[in-house]
Amino acid sequence: MELWVRQATDGEAAFFDEHGWVRLGAAASTARSRW
Image (cartoon, rainbow, N blue to C red; front, side):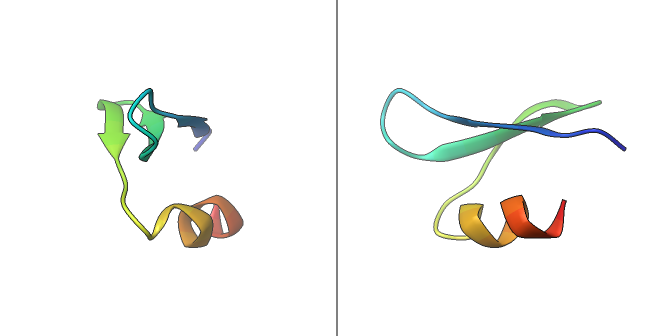
C-alpha cells in the first residue's frame, strides 16, 4: 500500500490512501513512521 502524508491547511496532518484523505491528529508522526 502506498500512502501520501501531507500537512492540512489547519495544521492537522492527513494521509491519502484508497479511501481518500484521512485525517490524523497527534498520531501523524507515528503513522508517518509506520507506513
